[in-house]
Image 1 (cartoon, rainbow, N blue to C red):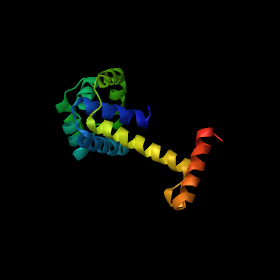
Image 2 (cartoon, rainbow, N blue to C red):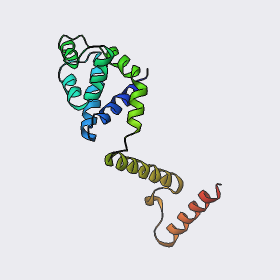
Image 3 (cartoon, rainbow, N blue to C red):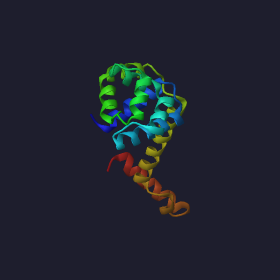
Amino acid sequence: MTDATTMALQDACARLSGADLSERIGSATAFRQSMSMGLFMGEEFNMLLEYNPHMMTLVAVFHDITVGQLRVRARARDLKAEDITRALFAHRAEIEENNGALAPSFEERALGIARAGGRIAAAFTAGVGMPTEWKGGRAGLLMLGERLDVLLKGD
């Protein structure tokens, strides 16, 4: 059980809960903090109840208790990280199937486009250098042309 997989399952549950991007970030932060402490309790637990009720319901179902009983366990400092992780992995197929039916949100699409733009800019800079390296006027254009020729020919 990897941290990345656990975080992805948590985020998928938050999406299924209808959380927007900022709520998903809050949920992820609370989840990460709880996982690092090894316990789900206090404000982090309450934030997860608010922003990620789908996950908390799955955890309750896995342990054959109610969400209210989860709250009691959290107050008693008896809701351990492994209890949450085991529940998420037990419901993994269901989470992934249901999450796959959701279309990406506007924020996710915009973030994907921004990341792609960053990768394009990095690739361009790696190939032709920074504009500050180019000499002005005709010499700069010739230098840029030469670098682009090298890229296109694959030399």
